Length: 120
Image: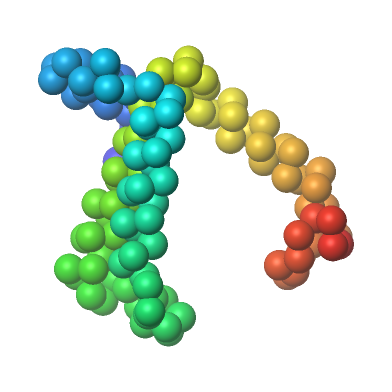
């Protein structure tokens, strides 16, 4: 479905869901950014205390895999809501950030390295 659904369509679906419930009054940048953080923490909690090997096999644990899917979707929904409320274009923001990161992390210096750009 990723290949069939645009970001704009997802934003519209999230906004329609919100508006059908009269929740727009709760959707302000402060609360949405907090919701993103809270949902991100819930996603992180699913991985807490698990070793790298078990995390790499997460798809084998159907219950955990579905929980990860749900929490990641919550993060995405709130992020799309934030972009909607602030009238930001997600595709442009991602493209701009990738271009900035390409300047900060040139392939010849950063390939295979986890160093931060100021350490390269």
